[in-house]
Image (cartoon, rainbow, N blue to C red):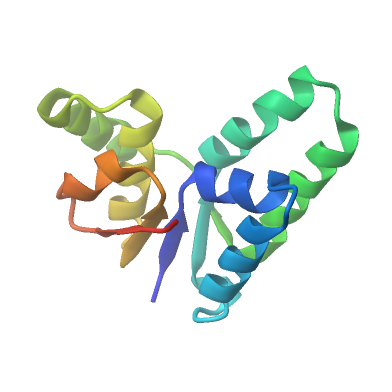
Length: 131
């Protein structure tokens, strides 16, 4: 199974002070092999904004370690074209539309997120809501 994890799950896993987010993510990831995780530079950007703003180098380093966990997809013209259609048809925000498009265009079986708005959008990839 090929899985794309939305940025919100990585942020929850890395920044949750009680460690609950990390344990949830670890449990979910135990079901799939690391080479079946798809990442994107959009995830990286979204995760790094707040730590860079707050000048938290240790947190930046924690996010940088994520890239060893899976394949990184470069965003393509096809991703932006599909994202534009998703934005137009479902009134999604640009990052959400791009996450869905990258997952669909890279033949992911599932996109994992805790964003309930994405569950109702049909893109050829199953949206699994994780809490």
